[in-house]
Image 1 (tube, rainbow, N blue to C red):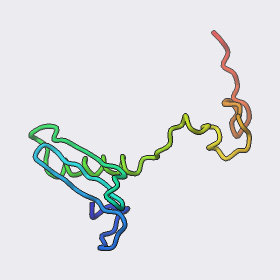
Image 2: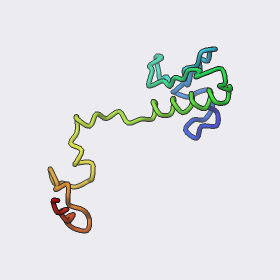
Image 3: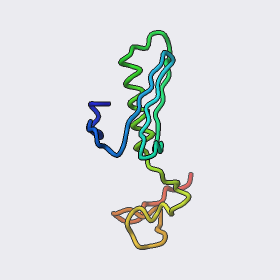
Length: 106
C-alpha cells in the first residue's frame, strides 16, 4: 500500500487505511472521520501455493477496485447524457461519421 500512487503516508491525514491480514486472507479498508468506512477490499488464500506476495497483490487490487469504483447506478442517470450533448436522446446508430449502414438481411 505504501507504493500506491493514490496514497501518501502522513500523520495528519483525514483518511486512514487499515490492513487486517490473517492466515486465511486479508481485508484493507479506507476509513474517514468517525471511523466511516468508504470501502474495503478483501482477498482469501486460494490454495497452499499462494505466496505472501501473491495474496498481498490480490488484496491491494481488490482494495483499489472497490474503493475507487464509481458509485453510480446507471439506472439513476440517463446514460446518453454522459456524452456531453444537450440532446435528451440520440440515435444509437449515429456515429461521428454519419449513420451506420444497415446490414442486409439474409
